[in-house]
Every structure is written in C-alpha cells, then in structure tokens.
Image (cartoon, rainbow, N blue to C red; front, side, top):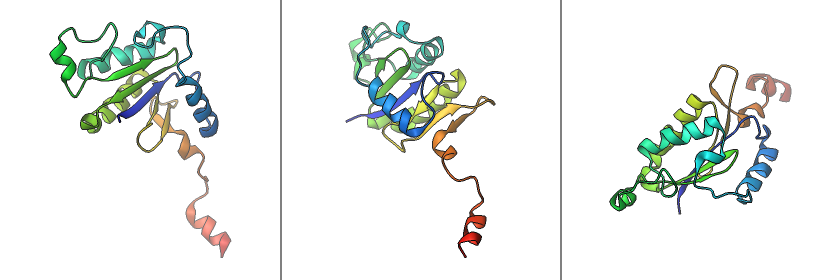
Length: 153
C-alpha cells in the first residue's frame, strides 16, 4: 500500500465536495489517450510542480526517472500518474511525513489544488490571496458556535 496525494488543476475541478469526489473518480479511471508518465500532457502549473517535486522525490517511471538503478531503490522514489488536469503521487509510507509538506508547499507555490487522498481527505483550492483553502471548511456553518447553542436553549 502507498501514501497517496494528488494535485490538480483548480480551474477545472469542481469546488463542492460531492462533485469533486465524482470528478476524482473519473480522473483515476485513467481513460485519457496517452501514457501517464510524461508531464508534457499536463498544465504548465502542474508540470512545474512535478519538475520541482522530482528533485526530492524522483519519478519511478518516465522521462524524469533516474538513470541509475540504485536510485530507484530509494524510499523517496515516487510513482506519479500524470493526467491532463491531475498528478497523482504514490509515496512510500516511510516518507509520508516529508512528502505531505513538500506537496502542499509546492501546490501553493504553483497555485494548484491539493487532495489528501490517504489522509484526512481534505481538498484545497488556491484562494484570491494565493493561499490554499479547504472546501470542506466552506461547508461548515458560518454562525458562531455560541449563537447556535443560544438558539437551541
């Protein structure tokens, strides 16, 4: 089993949890007419995210894979599946604590969305300030908790 995270094109992905998860299921059917190891097929932002990620987490397959077979034995080698609007990264669990912040930091840097597939299930989109916001937080009531309790009494 792997530790999986996904980055995505926030201009294409739906911003409601239900619709996003339906869209996600469609994306991971891998039905696009290309191989899924070359970042040439994806957006500029996702491509740049991928190129920087491979400095610390080299690609298992494709044109960015290390030439040295010994490098492929590293725990940091990552299996990337690259679609037009998503990059799905499968890490070894031994590097999960390093992978999560790296993926998140670069998602914000390149203004792509972030989905915590193997963890909390959080779905983050860039906001107008360039920060990543959870769409799950947007679904919570905007009323202060004490106002809700006061009404209940």
